[in-house]
Image (cartoon, rainbow, N blue to C red; front, top):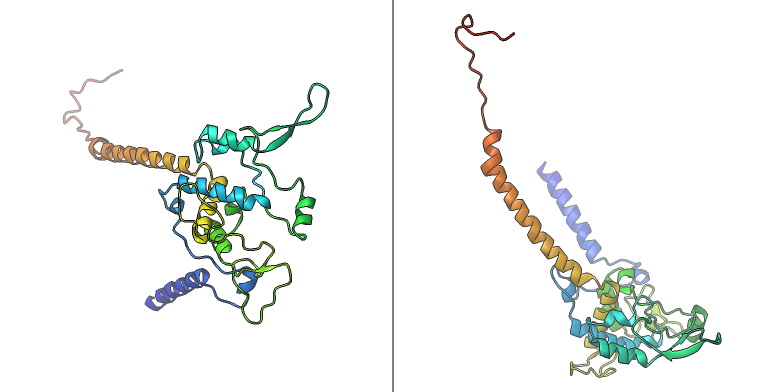
Length: 277
């Protein structure tokens, strides 16, 4: 019995270790597993760093928005999350949107407003592929949910560019990144030290820039995360209190009823007992 239990436990631990630290011949085809990075929102009670969200949107606007869209995010979503309403109105007004028709039935261009979506870099998929040698830059609205590894994978991908190892050849127009399945990715490295100047004076190293834009993309995929965790804490407190009250009632009130003994004492002299008709 002991040997069987030890074998089962050892096998399970080995499988878990291999799953977390797998090394096999097909690793390059699947991509390296990213390391676990200490993003605060990943903790059980952790929430977003909203200053990082603000910096991350700046990185997206100045670097990522040239190729990638953010279809599910509207300007109004940024209000009271990373910017004030006036700041968002000013940013939206920097872009022009087609609207109409007007009184004579013609379409016209107008400045952006809070209800407009974040503008796309390309009008359609064909234009996006034509501008990127056939590759289609994915929409980043839900990218941290759409990729195995989430924020850890996106961060590792953005900071993991390197020269291909000996014996590995990369086709012209592609770049080597060991975290990308197959190792060859069409997107070139875009995040370097100093590529963005943060308005709050935060150090603009490549790792800091990647961390901030990944935090922003995580927020775009889960904008309700802070509220969800806040409600979760309230629910835990409420149900913990109700559970404690229930246990107290069970022990001090209901328990006396459950342990009550009902005894029937029949009369000793049945002959003198009055009968009911």
